[in-house]
Amino acid sequence: IGVLVLPGIGRTALAVEGFQVERFHAAPPTGTFTLVRDASESTSPGWSAAAFLSHADHPLQVERADRRIDGIIDSTTTLEAVTATSREGWTVHIAVPVTLHQSVRDSAARQAVLPGDVATSGLNDVRFGVAHGGEFPGGFSLAGFGVASLPTGDASSLMGADGPTTETGVALAVRLGGYALGTSGAYLSRPGGAVGEEIALAAGIARRTSQPLGASLEVVGFVPLSGEEPAGAEILATANWRRRVRIGAAIGFGDAVGVPRYRVVAGCSFGRR
Image (tube, rainbow, N blue to C red; front, side, top):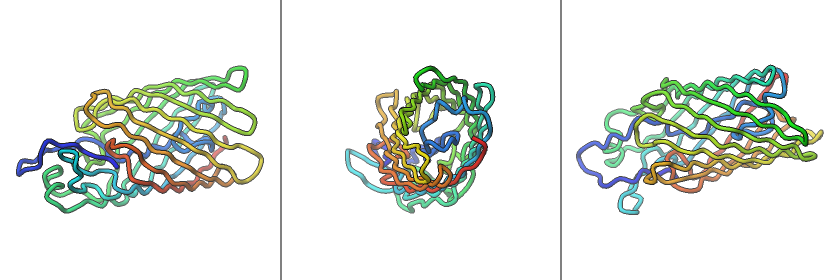
């Protein structure tokens, strides 16, 4: 469960706004994974698009002296649309996330952390990304990528950051028979706020066969660089039909801000890849 560790709760507002609490960031759609970036995306020319609905339970709580004292965000339901196009080893994508409903706790702790009115729905930070990669002998694919988020979300309602954020990293994919393995590592730079710079790690395995039904298991983790914020991770299991319709569920571990107790996901994708 995502936790803010605070020295105290009093009458003075602690103003921890300025970050996006939702951590569900869909990868450019290839039909293989949901969250893990597929390094082979740039080797398959064409375009693709996807939409994912995600419901996260208790993504943000508040803690003092190692004791959970109250909730801030009890749940979030988001819709994320992402589209990508690839050509000659390059991929560009855009993702537009929208909070459909955010359940905000009406409590003294919430008022101390998030004073005033908090929106229950709205646009999050829009992301733009570019990747370049290639395929190598043995079924290996390697890609470097960069993503920039624009501050289009409401920072005072935890739907966006105070300024642009960037992500740079590398991704590796391997095809082994009917299985696809993917992993990536990235450095996340954010403007000042309760959530700072992080290393984001992801890995997944997917079953790719000629059969209509497929499955994947993915883990994404966040390691803060400040040494003061907690780390966290989500493990997501999904089933898909012809790599187009996908449903799944995730369990959160650790107390990184935005990591939920559990998450349920449903989505669909289409395109020429």
